[in-house]
Length: 333
Image (cartoon, rainbow, N blue to C red; front, top):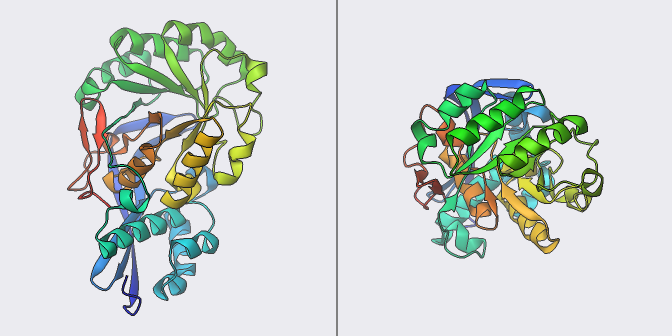
């Protein structure tokens, strides 16, 4: 690293339309706003993208303001270690942290996976996510377009009676795939118990964030035969001790935890604690998927289909083939 060279920070906001409206519990998305950070020094540049965490009140204005509060420190040479104390976990820190990782890779001539002390990245089986629509629409979507080649599907459910028909319809259309469901905090215990026979019959392998944060019963109370994953309940490394006995798996999203640095820490510690590890996304282009793809090398479940939901993507972009995602270092890192 050239410590005498000036560090420069550039920030821009982009909007990416979705292919079709995307429905989850309490929200319908039609397009995606992202913030893109570039950190440059000595002829090298690193990039990071973040969508922010909407349920924590993060929008593009918030992310821009947060980044501007640390501009002077970044341009004075603050690195990844210092960044952890300069900003809270969230989209702003994620974009900066990922940009710093790529900058370090380009300055050192070593790819990010080497800097992270990982093996060479392998393609990862990824889930493809179906928004919560009527059962026939979801079943049709599961067999068309990019979803035709999927080998793993994740269904968004909303805690209503229609959930059972949604699951049955998609399983009938795609008897061949791994299947998980995601409630985004939309279930009650009663609804889950009523839905459970349908989930078992449909061979559902994972139930993601069924209950509102702070109301999660223990696994012993639920007696669940299907693993339960924490998403909104697991924001940062500090939340890991609270997962024991309530979740089997934790879903790491770089926007939640504030970047690749903490994402890797969570993945490694969760494995030590005997928890399953999943990596997810807040929707994004391949620039957001690529750092998460690095975390995915440590995960059993991968949900990195963000670009599939968009009308377009960056070039070069992640490659989706045979149900897998591949992000080489030309995409990022």
